[in-house]
Length: 271
Image (cartoon, rainbow, N blue to C red):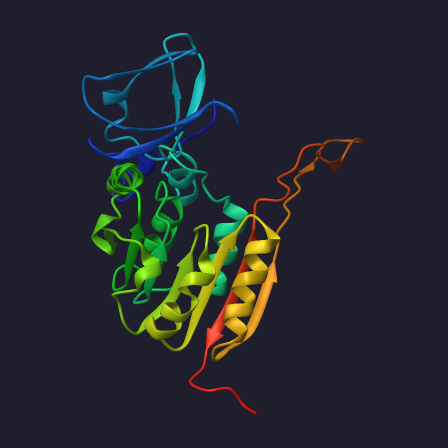
């Protein structure tokens, strides 16, 4: 039996408390995000787990189900929360989200306008990046989508850094001097001028579009206003299978998900 230091079980910083969320992992396909409550059981095809038995135990431990299957008990990362959202719309892939956060330079104190809340996946990732002093102002035209997003964001504990609103953002952006504007909507070019007005100087505009026609129209509008560094990228992610004598790229990969267009606001353009 492997030696596990007693100090691991007495450390209060890493121990699971009642009401905490955990990420329960059996393998790559069977993993679950759930809340720990005393007296409750979580049932899987591999047997059930007494959730109350996890209280006071450390994240990273292994728990055995009623049928003898072993699960890892992890603390949910933001990527786990994003991938395990309730979905009413297509959720952005982590490969795209990471680029968006980097390109918009989000950090504590950043203020961001998002249009197209969807299921709230990107909203949560951005809120996680801007806390504790920033804010995400997220708008959607669908009340149904926003209800799903609100439920997901509440579960993640990130709602204090999110303001949700039902609004057609093509009619104008109510916020001023924001650091970034992100659009995931059918006609982002209709918001380019309002985005320029809402952004602080040097602020970042970004849009996510599945078709190149959308990109062309958006880029044309950006070019007609004081924006610089206008670029569009597409990210492809391919995992490598690593095993003795058969290391190679996996046959399946995450290919096209969408095009990301970004630009930076300036006050005026040079002649």
